[in-house]
Image (cartoon, rainbow, N blue to C red; front, side, top):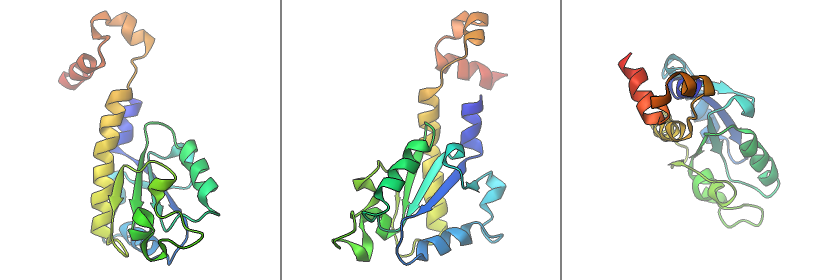
Length: 169
């Protein structure tokens, strides 16, 4: 049940790898009362161990590459990575520079791409909604029933049957 609650109230980790910070400003706009994503339970977290969705902005430089990988490894499974802005998607205006990796997907796996320079707040929200759909699928695939439930309800060893039973209640 804890795993399913992560989908309803996702915690987001935002990491800026550099660049012009245009996408970072737009992410801050998403958190303002005009868009107010916190009413949906989306909370920006500074701790990767509490995050469900990993938002990455800016071009990945050789200097921040290792830090990005470390943060990715600290986010618990299931996790979803969202590349926000042209720089994060493919390097943007910094593409093919000597110190740029040309996109987040060259370093860590990316689930959702939000293109744009800078990506608009409604595009970022759409990207996070798509990320939540992917997180929901990953969560349902990774749910392992606790032993006490398996013992109490032997017929519910199949997690899909268990989820259907819980929805009926």
